[in-house]
Length: 535
Image (cartoon, one colour):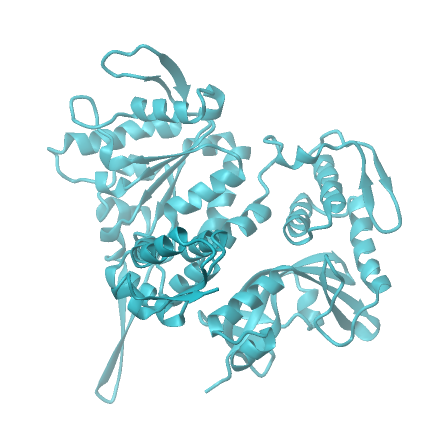
């Protein structure tokens, strides 16, 4: 059996022909072949960072580095508890690192890894500070000379803002360069030998709502919390950026599909936070047309208006998420309400003005809300669509037959035929599917997500002066329960809440008594089965 490795997947950013900067995207587990190419579990191939031909290739934006055998990972990271904790330590460490490559004499690449808080290296051949400055100076000179495209400048800015805690001057320098590319007036700039100093720029400039969306920066932040949905996150953020620049794109909605608990709502709430827009979720199953029991769109817009502090402009620039939209699909001629709600959403998506009011029967206050500048998102599992996309590939030899299931990509026709959605409705949406989460993905959600239930519980106990220990058996039990119940990441939270509340009550009611609480597999079956370690 081939040896397994944990590696860092890095994105390449070319400074010039001899200098490159790489930022960490994620860790991956897989094999390394005889050509020193890393192959992940999905069969994707990444060349090593140290091959010059890949560095200079325009077709190879990603490479791998920092390979550690899985069997050596715990020792390498100095972790004694579990492999999962070692993975977390590996991920945390390399998120702080930026790798610089210099192509030296005889076309030999030289790698230096830098932590911007304290200059360090991952190898014994530690670079000097002057060598480090040479690379950074080349970057600075390129910015000052206007050598980089707008996309490259934004990418570099995301790297510095995300990974370099002491690089505010560089981030602001990149802001100036980006403004110049956009044709905006630039403030006065002074140069020195190693960096650009930007004068008279307020610190909140980076949050300017008129600035185009920072796709890379938002992606990096969103995928810290939303695990295993990188492709969907990147697509949605890009689609929102397109809507900002192309007015006609605002007349279309984004349709998020995927199983329960994969993170559709969470993805949009995270993006809304990062682009500083209000987020309002509407349960489509509760929306009705006139004459039916339920809420109408005007009532929902009034709630949004209140949520925005009665700031009309803010409300008109919100992200509005209609969840469970698949429940409104119907082929029954008698289902007037179902079809009516779908039809009512068409003008909302294209941009219409509604009279929102505090009381539908006896309004005392009204406000006109226009939806033209809203980002409209629709969500649904569309189980009937995806169960019809299975393709069976039967292969037989010598009387033995094996079957491998594959899934083709859903088309608009599939949503009309199997999802029972109208043609005219599907013609106004961009379809983005979120991945189903397997056991490894769910485990990553628990252990790596910035806002996972385990992280939140750990912080709460820490506030009480107590550390909570989740054993590997406890983690595995939660994951298996979520898989069995088909509840995805959302279902894991309720399992944790049910198993931990008594332990929390005991620690809360007895301050400064316990140093540690331990939860294991038995805790999942019995909420009194936890261990307490006294101080």
